[in-house]
Length: 64
Image (cartoon, rainbow, N blue to C red; front, side):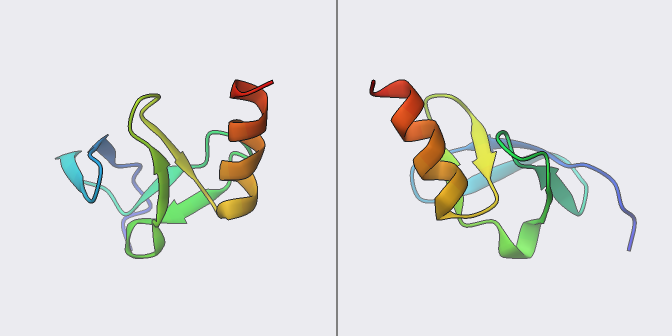
């Protein structure tokens, strides 16, 4: 595997690959997320999240 960070544009039901790679980083934890496992992101913030736990953490911060 290349271990290169991908650049993506997040859409509502999919993402576009702008720069090839095999993973992105979670905006909350910094963990690597393989593209084949990427399921959680925020379109408005253009951020990826490792799991629903990190996505919920961001939601709580934004909706205080």
